[in-house]
Image 1: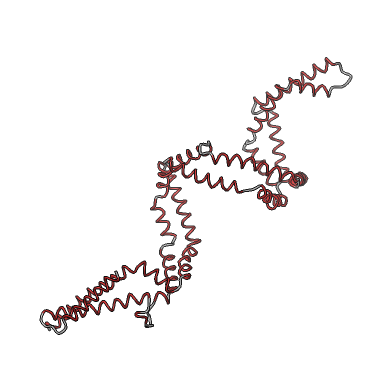
Image 2: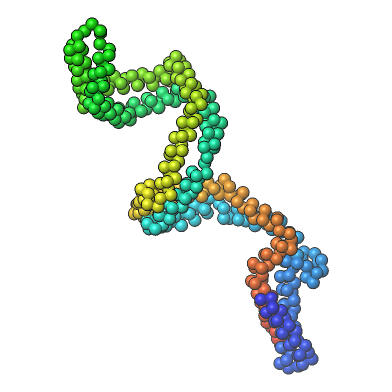
Length: 396
């Protein structure tokens, strides 16, 4: 484009020289060529002055970009911050983007959901593999256990226990314990009766001991069975009352609180705690790594299924789309409000790293093609203006 603009200037110069001293119609051509050269040279000077000193001469107010790149970068940063990274603009743009609908449509395709799950599984697996036993032990010994030792846990434990009892969340565990106790008692009658026989007085006859222990065994089995079958059994209520009392004591009774804290300290200061926790972590980690590495694992299949279902919900449920879009707008607004200024500093920091000539070269390569049209238009418009002025002058 620079060559085209220069070519027009040279063409105008040739025409100007060729028509020098000619009269008649050639006078109009000569005036047009003269004005075209003036327009071309003036606009060449204007365009060149943006990026360098014309012909190397240090004319004032030339080489504007190299000498004022810092100010230009700052102005560009402020312009973007004030006109683009504005909460209202960002919210409007995010709302118009229909992120939830697009995301839902994309996720509803099983291949896309599988791709997401595969990527997340790979990231999670790499993270788990890179966590060593030393890392876990260091975290436990250096951060978790010291914090637990200094943090009073009895009030928190009491409140948690009270909520569990109020919500009856422990009933499932009680039912499971009763079921296992019943199974064990029925499968180990001989063991139970033998243990009871060892507690019998030495002076009672053997047949009496057997009758008594058998009766005790049957009563215990029947009692456990009654508790299992009756959700309002007095033993269950007594157990709940005991837990409620313990929850209150953990929060208000100094003696209970002190005993709980001492128990916590004794447990946490045992070296075996770190070893046991690390061993448990290893078991969980190996299971997770194995599951995440298997493309056909139930965990990954379930993840794909849930993501597809989530995508279908986003597409079909307007209220869900509204919530997701609102969350996206809030998140984007938070980012630009909190970090918008820091984001745009990338502009000034990048331009500051360039030297003057580098900044000028990069900007000229980016917008120089359009700027050459200024020279071309200047040549054409200048020529037409010269023709008009010459014509008016001749008419006058």
